[in-house]
Image 1: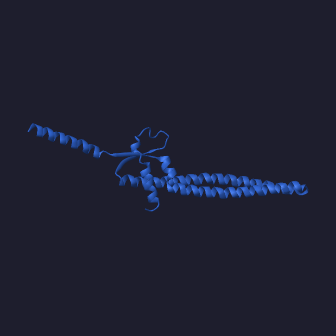
Image 2: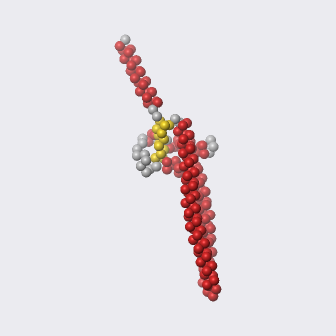
Image 3: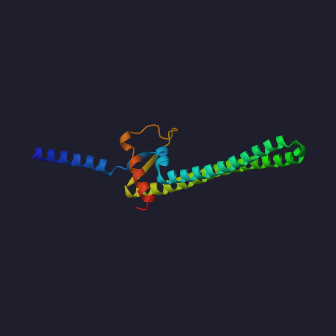
Length: 170
């Protein structure tokens, strides 16, 4: 009888330990930088930024080329120089103005796109956490917010697959 009670207590004890571990809150982390860089939306918006940048560089190159050609023309026709120098000055001002506007706008676009990307990632992360029953998913950004985590708790790849599938409409 005593052996049966001991065996029953041992089984109940092991069952309790298993239940405690099974019911523990799931916790994991993702590499935020990798998640951001490899998210399809990030890649698409990066291509848009590059396309915009190339178009703007073309405009600036064209203005610069026109200004240089005009400068050479003035060198050859010095008698009309003063009028033409004024025109050249206006061209230089336009070039400088557009360079400044394009740089400012590029910064705003990068910030806007990054905001959209993080907003979408955060929304997908909420859905992922709820679907997979996570209580906490930490973001590791390489700047000390997550000082240590076992690599087995890194779910970056799984999350990346999930958010890219969601982004693709799957």
